[in-house]
Image 1 (cartoon, rainbow, N blue to C red):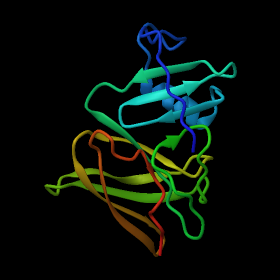
Image 2: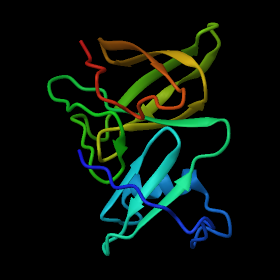
Image 3: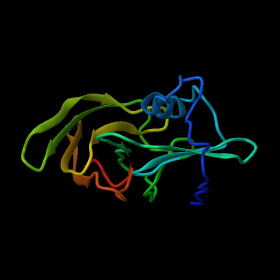
Image 4: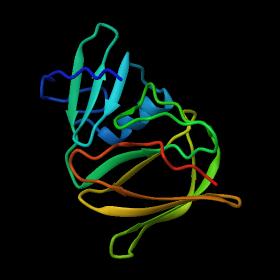
Amino acid sequence: MALLVGCSSGNNETEYGNTTDIKKLVNDYTVGNVEAASASITSSELIVTDENEEVTTYELEGEEFFVSIAPFIKQTHPCDIHSLTGCQGELVQEDFNVHIEDSKGNIILDEKKRTEANGFIDLWLPRDETFNVIITQGDKESTSKISTFDGDNTCITTMQLG
Protein backbone atom coordinates (compact mmCIF):
# COMPACT_ATOMS: atom_id res chain seq x y z
CA MET A 1 0.00 0.00 0.00
CA ALA A 2 1.36 3.43 -0.90
CA LEU A 3 1.16 6.07 1.77
CA LEU A 4 1.56 9.73 0.93
CA VAL A 5 2.64 11.98 3.76
CA GLY A 6 2.90 15.74 3.70
CA CYS A 7 2.80 18.75 5.93
CA SER A 8 -0.41 20.44 6.93
CA SER A 9 -0.86 24.12 7.39
CA GLY A 10 -0.86 23.36 11.10
CA ASN A 11 -4.11 25.13 11.89
CA ASN A 12 -6.44 22.13 11.44
CA GLU A 13 -9.33 24.47 10.61
CA THR A 14 -12.23 22.89 8.75
CA GLU A 15 -15.99 23.01 8.71
CA TYR A 16 -15.67 21.01 11.94
CA GLY A 17 -14.75 24.21 13.81
CA ASN A 18 -11.59 26.04 14.77
CA THR A 19 -10.04 22.89 16.18
CA THR A 20 -10.79 19.81 14.17
CA ASP A 21 -12.84 17.15 15.95
CA ILE A 22 -10.63 14.26 14.83
CA LYS A 23 -13.02 11.56 16.06
CA LYS A 24 -15.88 13.06 14.07
CA LEU A 25 -13.68 13.55 11.02
CA VAL A 26 -12.42 9.93 11.18
CA ASN A 27 -15.99 8.67 11.53
CA ASP A 28 -17.17 10.85 8.64
CA TYR A 29 -14.52 9.33 6.35
CA THR A 30 -15.42 5.82 7.55
CA VAL A 31 -19.14 6.19 6.85
CA GLY A 32 -18.68 8.25 3.67
CA ASN A 33 -20.07 11.58 4.93
CA VAL A 34 -16.95 13.28 3.55
CA GLU A 35 -14.80 12.16 0.66
CA ALA A 36 -11.12 12.24 -0.18
CA ALA A 37 -8.85 10.57 -2.67
CA SER A 38 -7.45 8.77 0.38
CA ALA A 39 -7.54 9.00 4.17
CA SER A 40 -5.33 6.85 6.39
CA ILE A 41 -4.72 6.85 10.12
CA THR A 42 -1.47 5.92 11.83
CA SER A 43 -0.74 5.75 15.54
CA SER A 44 0.06 9.47 15.51
CA GLU A 45 -1.78 11.17 12.64
CA LEU A 46 -4.68 11.25 10.21
CA ILE A 47 -3.40 11.75 6.65
CA VAL A 48 -5.87 13.00 4.05
CA THR A 49 -5.15 13.39 0.35
CA ASP A 50 -7.72 15.36 -1.62
CA GLU A 51 -8.64 15.01 -5.29
CA ASN A 52 -5.88 17.51 -6.22
CA GLU A 53 -3.29 15.33 -4.43
CA GLU A 54 -2.88 17.94 -1.69
CA VAL A 55 -2.05 16.29 1.62
CA THR A 56 -3.28 17.45 5.01
CA THR A 57 -2.15 15.82 8.24
CA TYR A 58 -3.91 16.05 11.57
CA GLU A 59 -1.93 15.18 14.67
CA LEU A 60 -3.66 12.70 16.97
CA GLU A 61 -3.34 14.29 20.35
CA GLY A 62 -4.67 13.12 23.65
CA GLU A 63 -4.88 9.87 25.52
CA GLU A 64 -6.78 7.81 22.95
CA PHE A 65 -5.49 5.56 20.16
CA PHE A 66 -7.54 4.68 17.07
CA VAL A 67 -7.79 1.03 16.06
CA SER A 68 -10.08 -0.59 13.51
CA ILE A 69 -10.83 -4.31 13.65
CA ALA A 70 -12.27 -6.40 10.80
CA PRO A 71 -13.43 -9.75 12.19
CA PHE A 72 -13.64 -12.33 9.41
CA ILE A 73 -14.59 -15.92 8.65
CA LYS A 74 -13.02 -16.63 5.23
CA GLN A 75 -11.50 -13.50 3.69
CA THR A 76 -9.11 -10.85 4.97
CA HIS A 77 -6.23 -8.72 3.76
CA PRO A 78 -2.85 -7.87 5.29
CA CYS A 79 -2.78 -4.36 6.70
CA ASP A 80 -0.92 -2.27 9.28
CA ILE A 81 -2.16 1.29 8.72
CA HIS A 82 -5.92 1.57 8.36
CA SER A 83 -7.22 3.26 5.23
CA LEU A 84 -10.53 4.92 6.09
CA THR A 85 -11.27 5.17 2.37
CA GLY A 86 -9.87 1.88 1.10
CA CYS A 87 -9.82 -1.02 3.57
CA GLN A 88 -12.71 -3.44 3.13
CA GLY A 89 -13.59 -6.24 5.55
CA GLU A 90 -15.62 -9.36 4.85
CA LEU A 91 -18.46 -9.02 7.39
CA VAL A 92 -20.42 -5.88 6.56
CA GLN A 93 -22.98 -4.35 8.92
CA GLU A 94 -23.06 -7.36 11.22
CA ASP A 95 -23.36 -7.40 15.01
CA PHE A 96 -20.61 -8.71 17.29
CA ASN A 97 -20.04 -8.85 21.01
CA VAL A 98 -16.77 -7.04 21.73
CA HIS A 99 -15.02 -7.56 25.07
CA ILE A 100 -11.76 -5.72 25.77
CA GLU A 101 -9.66 -5.89 28.95
CA ASP A 102 -6.42 -4.12 29.75
CA SER A 103 -3.35 -5.96 31.05
CA LYS A 104 -4.59 -5.58 34.64
CA GLY A 105 -7.93 -7.23 33.87
CA ASN A 106 -9.95 -3.99 33.87
CA ILE A 107 -12.85 -4.14 31.43
CA ILE A 108 -12.46 -1.35 28.88
CA LEU A 109 -15.37 -2.34 26.65
CA ASP A 110 -18.05 -5.01 26.83
CA GLU A 111 -20.85 -4.33 24.39
CA LYS A 112 -22.44 -5.16 21.09
CA LYS A 113 -20.86 -3.39 18.12
CA ARG A 114 -21.88 -3.35 14.47
CA THR A 115 -19.36 -3.32 11.65
CA GLU A 116 -19.65 -0.40 9.27
CA ALA A 117 -20.21 -0.74 5.52
CA ASN A 118 -16.45 -1.31 5.25
CA GLY A 119 -16.63 -4.38 7.53
CA PHE A 120 -14.64 -2.75 10.35
CA ILE A 121 -15.36 -1.84 13.96
CA ASP A 122 -13.69 1.48 14.80
CA LEU A 123 -12.54 1.93 18.40
CA TRP A 124 -10.73 4.60 20.41
CA LEU A 125 -8.75 2.92 23.19
CA PRO A 126 -6.41 4.28 25.88
CA ARG A 127 -2.87 4.85 24.60
CA ASP A 128 0.22 2.98 25.77
CA GLU A 129 -1.56 -0.20 26.85
CA THR A 130 -1.86 -3.85 25.85
CA PHE A 131 -5.35 -5.32 25.58
CA ASN A 132 -6.99 -8.72 25.35
CA VAL A 133 -9.75 -8.55 22.75
CA ILE A 134 -12.50 -11.17 22.41
CA ILE A 135 -14.96 -10.86 19.55
CA THR A 136 -17.90 -13.25 19.35
CA GLN A 137 -20.77 -13.77 16.96
CA GLY A 138 -23.11 -16.62 17.82
CA ASP A 139 -20.93 -19.66 18.53
CA LYS A 140 -17.89 -18.22 16.71
CA GLU A 141 -15.10 -16.47 18.61
CA SER A 142 -11.73 -14.82 18.05
CA THR A 143 -9.23 -13.73 20.68
CA SER A 144 -6.24 -11.46 20.16
CA LYS A 145 -3.80 -9.20 21.98
CA ILE A 146 -3.42 -5.70 20.61
CA SER A 147 -1.42 -2.74 21.84
CA THR A 148 -1.72 1.00 21.50
CA PHE A 149 1.86 2.25 21.68
CA ASP A 150 3.37 4.74 19.23
CA GLY A 151 4.02 2.91 15.96
CA ASP A 152 1.52 0.10 16.62
CA ASN A 153 -0.93 -1.02 13.95
CA THR A 154 -4.25 0.78 13.54
CA CYS A 155 -5.69 -1.91 11.25
CA ILE A 156 -6.38 -5.35 12.75
CA THR A 157 -7.31 -7.90 10.07
CA THR A 158 -6.15 -11.07 11.85
CA MET A 159 -9.18 -11.89 14.02
CA GLN A 160 -10.69 -14.94 12.33
CA LEU A 161 -13.89 -16.21 13.89
CA GLY A 162 -13.90 -19.94 14.40
